[in-house]
Amino acid sequence: MPGNPKECRQHAGNCRRLASESLTVSGRNTFLNLADHWERLAAELENAELFIKAMQEIKPPIAAE
Image 1 (tube, rainbow, N blue to C red):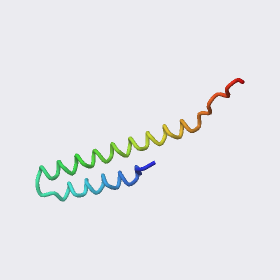
Image 2 (cartoon, one colour):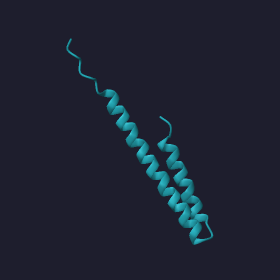
Image 3 (spheres, rainbow, N blue to C red):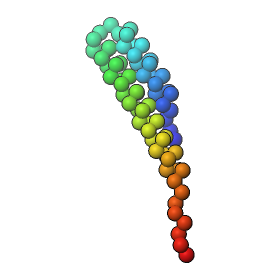
Image 4 (cartoon, rainbow, N blue to C red):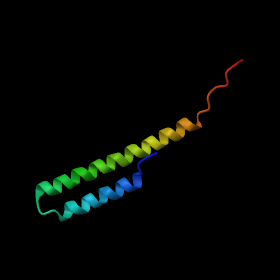
């Protein structure tokens, strides 16, 4: 599955660092919003991984012949 929650959280951390270094309020807010989006993407990827794993564990019923 494309996407890695760990990498997304690293990007979020980088955005938070850049926000703390930003010289303007708008720059800070932009980086904080980006960090929030990266965090949400990480959570969505984790949920998708769990869903895929659960679906793979479901065995289809054996059809009666």
